[in-house]
Length: 372
Image 1 (cartoon, rainbow, N blue to C red):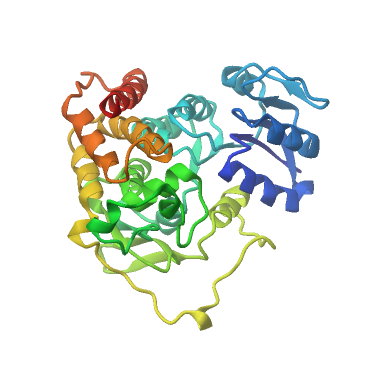
Image 2: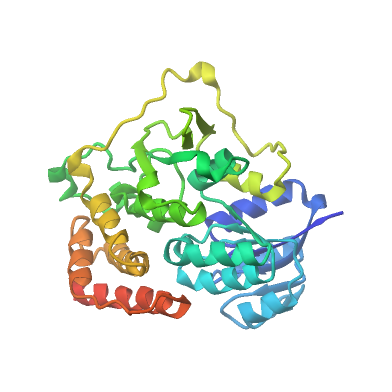
C-alpha cells in the first residue's frame, strides 16, 4: 500500500530534498498535496512530475493536472494524507501545524518558527490528539532517536552540537568587516540564506535550544550546546547512569528526512553518503570562546525572561537578517538593533496562539523601525 504524503512548502530547500528522496522510490508514495509560496515555476514543474491531487500557491494560475485549492484551511479540509511534511518558513507555518496535530496526523516538522514560538502548545496538542511530531532538524532528529525509547525521568541532559558557521574562527575585529558573501559560505551545510546567517551568529543554536526544550519537555538548563567542527555528531543524550547515546551521520539534511519518511523503518538511498571512519582522524568538542557568545548569551537570557520571548526573537531576528542580506546594516549591527527593539518592547500579558503571532509580527516591525 502506498504511503500518502503531502508537502507544505515543496519548493524550498527542505521540500525539494523531500521530493528528491521520494522520486527515488516513487512507487511507494502517492503525493496528495504540494504547496509553494511565490515559486510558481518550480511548483508547476513538481505538479507535472508528481501529479498531486491538490496544489496551492500565492497565485491563481491553473495547471494541467490536479486541483488548485484556495488556502491552507481548504487544504487540510480535503487532504487525506498519512504523512504531512510542513516545510514552510515563518510563523505562518504554525496554523497548518496546529490543524494537523488536531487531526491526529503524523507530521514531519521543519518549520522552525512554530517550534520555537509555540512548540509547547504543539506538543500538548499532539499528545491530546494522538498525533506524532517527527523533527526534521538534524540535531533534534538525533536527540529524538536517542531518547524516544527511554524513560524520560532518566535523562540528565541533552547536547546539541554546533559547527560554528562560516565565521567560527573570525576575531571580533574581523566581524566588523564581514560581507554577506562571507557569511553565506558555510563550511559543512548547504542551507537557505536566513538559516546560514543564523548559524554564523549562533542565534540558530538559541532557536534549537528552545525547540529541544519544547519538543522533549525539558527545562532550558538541561539543553547544552558544544562546538563540534566536524559536524558528524548531531546530538547526544546523557543519562543519570553516566551512559551517553549519540547519533552520527554525514552532514546532509537528506538523512533526517529519509528517517522521517520511512519511520519506523530504516531504508537505504543512493542519495545518502555514509561516514567512512577510516578517513576520520578525530572527533572533537569545544566550548565557545567568550567573544563568540554575545549573540548566544543574549538569546538564552531572552528565552528565560518571558513565555513570549521566543516569539520576539523569531520576529526580531527575521527583520535583522533581512536587512543584513539586503546590505542595509552591517553584520555586527544586527545584534544591536535587536537589543534596542527588545529594550522598548511591551509583551502581551497572555500566552496563547494569537499573542504568539502578534508578538512575532510586532517584534519584526519594531526591529525594522530601529534600522530606519
